[in-house]
Length: 143
Picture 1 (cartoon, one colour):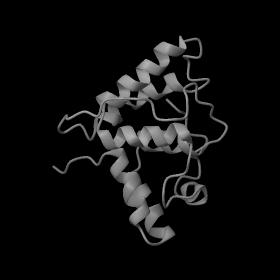
Picture 2 (cartoon, helix red, strand yellow):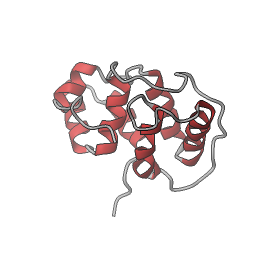
Picture 3 (cartoon, helix red, strand yellow):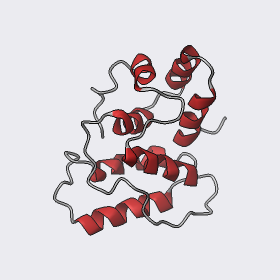
Picture 4 (cartoon, helix red, strand yellow):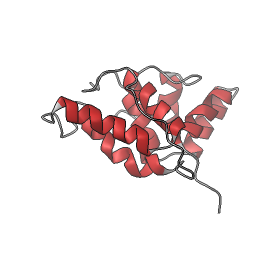
């Protein structure tokens, strides 16, 4: 059985696709709730993060075979944005939980999350292309 691609691998591969159609097909082929969640948190400017939008200091890990870890851990992302159910959480605790998440997952996925909180579009993926791939992306519940 083939290994599940890391979410960062899926996003990185989009920038290598030449045409909009190839990008849309790639996203649809690798569709998952977790991918949609990260894309929505990145592109939806109505979402307000409750942590600084810059990279915190964290230790890169040397774990092997953790490429799919973010699929399991994505539910923790709701701690870090307004309306996710954790708005009253102590700020220091919230930021330490984010650092802990970054240290638990694949290093490339950690970099992906740092880009996500900055809400800067991913290389090679415009919001227009994203909406063509997933027309209901902004209706997708962020879990």
